[in-house]
Image 1 (cartoon, helix red, strand yellow):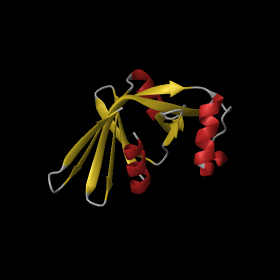
Image 2 (cartoon, one colour):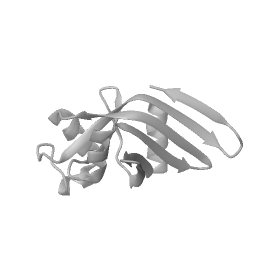
Image 3 (cartoon, rainbow, N blue to C red):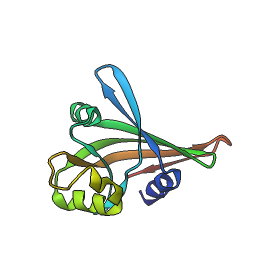
Amino acid sequence: MQEVYDFLKEAEVYYLATVEGDQPRVRPFATYIIFEGKLYIQTGKSKPVSKQIAANPKIEICAFSKGTWLRLAAEAVNDDRIEAKTYALDQFPQLKDRYAADDGNMQVLYLKNATATFESFQGEAKTVKF
C-alpha cells in the first residue's frame, strides 16, 4: 500500500473512474492519505462521484509518472468518522476553505480489496494487493 501511496504522491494527480448507470465517468483527483493502515481518497457528498460510489462502490484509479502507470481497482468504503476527516484535512489543508470535518458534506473513503498494477512501456509489470 505504501508503494501505491508514494506513486500517487509522485504523480500528483490521478484519475478516478466510477460508473453511472451504464456510463463510465472519469475525473481528476489529487487527495489520498493513509490513515489507520488504510489508503483513503476524499470527495464531497454533494458531488455526482459520491452518488456513483454509493450506487456502485467499485472504482478504478489510474495515474502516470516517469514512464510508469498505475491501475488500481478497489471498493471504496465510506468512513464517516470525524477523526478520519480531520486527518485528511490536516494532510491537505488547501481543502479547508471548501470542507470541514463536521460539515455533512466532506467524505472520506478507504479502499478495500485493492489490486494495484504498475506497468511501463518496457513491458514491466508488478501487482500489489491490499
